[in-house]
Image (cartoon, rainbow, N blue to C red; front, top):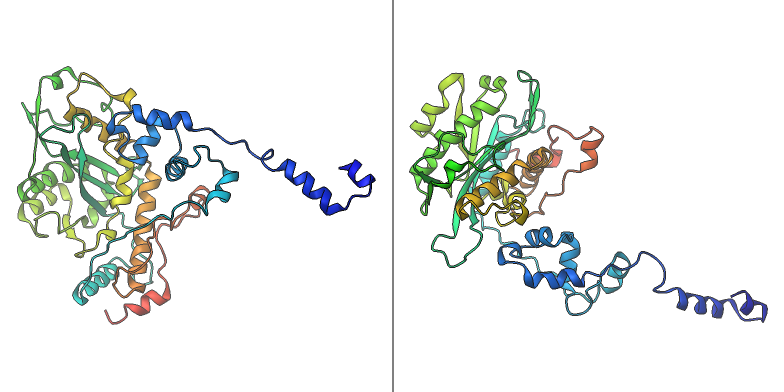
Length: 389
């Protein structure tokens, strides 16, 4: 460059010569993921059934794996420098979000439900007395030709909070229970977080029968024998002074809100545990939505944690319990704050479901510096929209 300037060459010509040599030889070096993509063909089907499971098996970040699969056939090496150059050549991602058509009655019920979770000063309730339950079908690993391929689990969470009596933080995880019948029956408390990784020899001789049809009787038994005892055992005892509400989807279960058997079990020991339904066609009003349940995806069972001594049913149960036990309490707390922001959006939309998702409404940085709010202050515009209700 110096020699060219000395002989009288123009600055523009010199810069073009230098930049042509510099392009491709500076910045972070590209990473070659071709070997990882070749290993995909050797993985069993249950380890490549989703991006999360495939990312765990290959050791490649999900975002990088997604870009590699989108760009497959053009270039298997993607880095931060060439991603901007090739982004225009990639095929656009098609997002298909199907939302139910709501009637005026549905919109009114949604607005009334959101208003019931708000204090007179415009701040949402802390929701410490709310228990959210949901059901999820989980696929059995291994043979896809088996007659019974799935097991239904019931998952229950509450908001993480401080327990003054126990002097410790409640992590919000009440439990996850499978709809199976053990023959002979298992002793109470066999499946716990402490022994999820251990193998009890007495469990190997038992046979698990998967419940293929979940009726009102099974849901009722699961709530009275598993959910309510877990609430009384794990929730802070200070919540006995207020009603504890179990929120569920009335489209999935066939229990009434004033079910006498549930009310009888929920009123013992000084507790007041009730059942509450969310409005119809409102899956976004439960913290255990589809996005939240991705963290306990059933097929993500690492091979190094599998036990060949266990049958497929017990292996799946242990895998789901293990991933549920590893769920961070920060994610559960963020889900409750996201629920409050979603209620605010519903109020702004007049009860409609035509609004953007609020999954990223909270930030990790707010929690790190201690400024993450306990409850969200509702916007004035949202309060004006629900004034008639």
